[in-house]
Image (cartoon, rainbow, N blue to C red; front, side, top):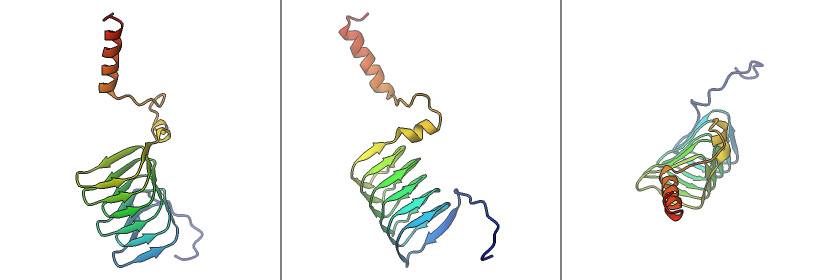
Length: 150
């Protein structure tokens, strides 16, 4: 109902907005719920939910969202609090700042990446240190070898 004074709780896990395949959208989008783009988008996107870029989509945007899936073409920087997935059909040209990054075989990523520890700390992962178990074990073995095996 238009003009209703009631505020509706928004579920960030549901797709609230769809930009269809025959749609060209220009301007800034701000959304509390998730967004799916199948058409063309030119302009920045800020989304509290997830963003899915469909296989035929062409997006020129700086994107901020919880999680992002890129199956189409994106030119712009992406910042997520969660994960970024570039599928086998996805092309991403831009810099990323994410907590988790997955690129499937055949997917293209051109840019620089940064893993943001702030999002990891929000989940209560202790002191924020990220430890690679293999590298840690190898470093410990090298230290033992350098000290004469003691």
